[in-house]
Image 1 (cartoon, rainbow, N blue to C red):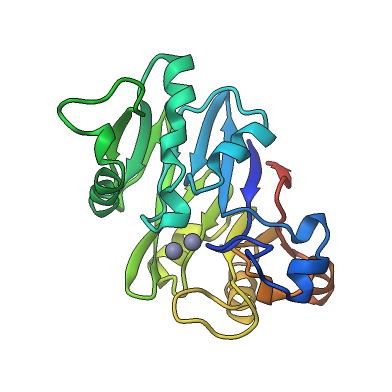
Image 2 (tube, protein in one colour):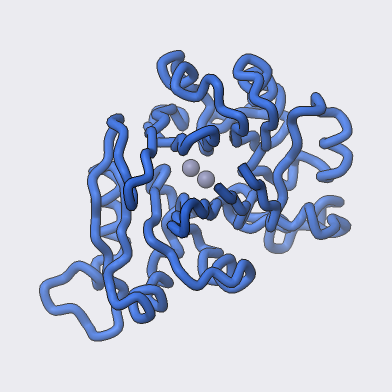
Length: 253
Ligand SMILES: [Zn+2]
Ligand SMILES: [Zn+2]
């Protein structure tokens, strides 16, 4: 399995538009973060988790030629805004894009992209096949995927486990039953926004605590804001099995 971090930034990305802070102005390549998403490649199946506003550029940057499915963690704009750009895959693969989402998120996608779901669809609009998921294990091209329910303040979000890899973003609370599902993963990816506490995201300290409890071989932090500080400086403070992820980072599992 190969995992590529397409984006590791919070909803505004880093740098933040018009921000004059040190990280936004003087950050190097690893401080530049597009909106959070990953690409998973396993046995010639290509799966995105989320398709935020940077989806188009992320597909170009990583030269993605084929995409079989998109799993949706939750319907916030920074995770679904790029779905219109599945059009090239529709055209090349001659089929709708398979979207796996809970009913609430399907409704949000249908509202957001109403023109793609209407009775009289304009030629060239994106096309989607919606698959309903919940807390039960599901398969994509025969690959077993375990949903990892968590809370984003009061909103339920889904993370996903494939084999030894667990990915959870946009949470500030992972229930015990989900931690049990994540146990034994070799690699865990978890969100942390910044150092200060936040209402709907783990801060760095909280994420580190969860990761120390799960104690995978390797862990990565994603969905990072400009307030986290410089990539290299934060990395130096972290336990050696935890690193901040960065855009373009690829893991082989
Ligand atoms: Zn988000
Ligand atoms: Zn969110």
